[in-house]
Length: 323
Image (cartoon, rainbow, N blue to C red; front, side, top):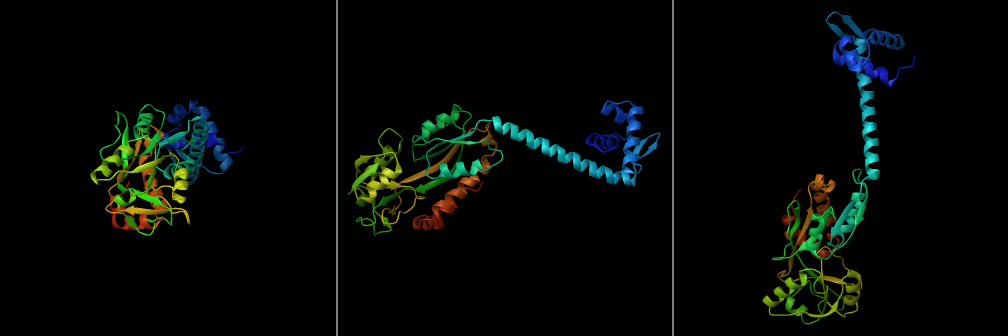
């Protein structure tokens, strides 16, 4: 007779029940039937597994060794079953849906999530309006939104929607052509930027244009917005040809011979990077892990430009929460 999984269950049941009588009830067998089965198992293994007495059964020294191995095998089998069940659930589960608008972070986070065992898949969308992204999280269209908000213009969070701040006070930069009059300075004044054509998103897509006008009004200037575009590559092309100056994320990158990032003196333009989610979702159950990865992505990507490294060393690393 070959020892099978069912035989290991018999050995464990007898040990945990403490008697053949109680074990027979647990296993749904008659006591004589269980006694005969145990004898056959012992004959196959070549040794007595239990001392029998009126008060019950206890493992022999040989039985203790066999019992330890039996439990290890059964635990391994349970692990295999759990993995198989989890895999089956992932095969039918809907993908994790990411939204919002935060530059490179969307792509970086989607790649990271796609490599995790608990993620059935990833679907990525972009929406420039933070409030629209928050509303999509609220109605279940998105599982997580990464959004920028500006002082005085934060999105409204409805019941059931939670958020975490990734970077509370990030400076907004500008991008210029390398041979632009503003390209030689590490930081430029907002008033100087206003002397040149400006390219930015069209009004109505987010509250950024309203915030920008308010800040410019406080500084006594207005932007000469000659171009309205939504896609960063289009803005970069206009900048590279000196047709305009454009706003830029502090985590952006210089493009050799085409685009340079420059800070604004006093950092008058600021924004907050926030993630929005519902705690009753798969993402909500792993939100600390997700936020920690976002901070790591943020730093790794931003550290490739000089301005970010200086800002991070002096200010940014003190602002970023630890999850």
